[in-house]
Length: 300
Ligand SMILES: C[C@](O)(C(=O)O)[C@H](CC(=O)O)C(=O)O
Ligand SMILES: [Mg+2]
Image (cartoon, rainbow, N blue to C red; front, side, top):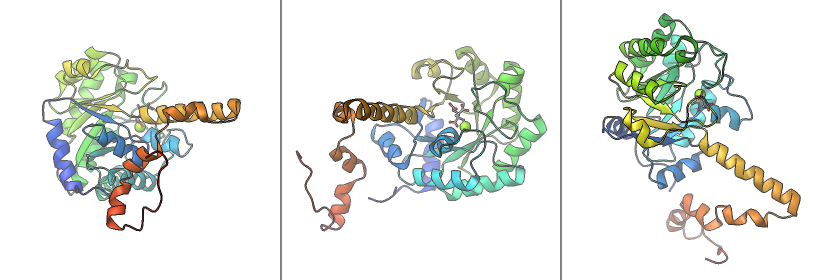
């Protein structure tokens, strides 16, 4: 009932355990708090909260328009709904190193287990598009150092994302990853790797956990969990997958209503009323106050 009973501190410890377990972990992207519940119910290890999804959900493109307040608020709403650790995409950290420090403290306050901060220029772009730019090494490392120094819970995970592969090549990505780890990054997110051997190259360059971004319609093929485990990846995110699926289903339903004059054809693929109530834990509220559940679900 209500929110997660697992505290943010416990979730952060759990996240650290998962990353050092030697088993690859899959973090699907929640597009709202309820989908985080679904991710937990299906047995995943954790929840990813995508900057692209947060922006797109507001009807905006993912070009650095969302603010720290918007991201921390929404990420907090998602994180509190699940006992799993949630990590959030903090884009470029929302400004200069001092802003990055504040970002980390706000995300700690919001109950996140960690965040990633990237080395793109502001305004940022989707990492799988062309024409993005990265900041110089000094600026990139200052961001990460500010983030690492600002946290009050030492288990809050600071992941450094580097987008430098697309602009300067793989070797530059290896060097930057090493420098970011030296600056205090607990984990590395190498963006837009072209193939498995590139993940392997990053694995060989650093000793910290590395993340693979399996976003659809991007620059990386959609590798399987076994393929990525084989090159030493520690965690996989599927950032926009559920939003794309949900919006795809919504589009098909709208087309059905338009063409058939009814949604009937789409009903079998919908979440039933009972399933939906199950996900929001209706029964627990009923147990708390028997006056709450005052109707019957037909067919149940
Ligand atoms: C991971 C990512 O930063 C995100 O915001 O989810 C995006 C995902 C996407 O646009 O597909 C990215 O830059 O890769
Ligand atoms: Mg992003």
